[in-house]
Length: 84
Image (tube, rainbow, N blue to C red; front, side):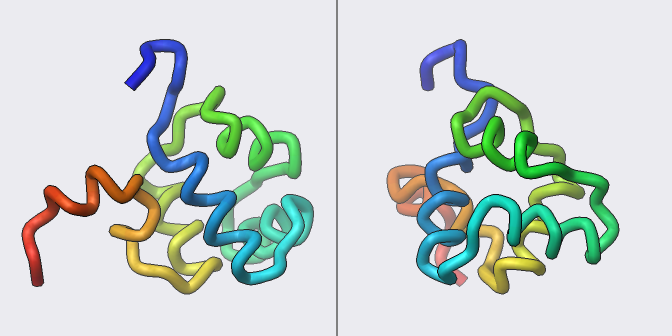
């Protein structure tokens, strides 16, 4: 991963968000309702991989988007995860 990128999940968040037909603002609003004080700008910076994502934030994203945490990792990382 390029050292200028602050997370590996940004592109996957875009993929999951758009698959659910959510705008960045809609995702931010849903995350706010789940207890995370986040704005559309923060979502955009996460998706652009300019901002880190904490474990707690990722857990909220997973709950709001209704996807397992593994889905937030790029395919090449998911391939290395142990099978359940």
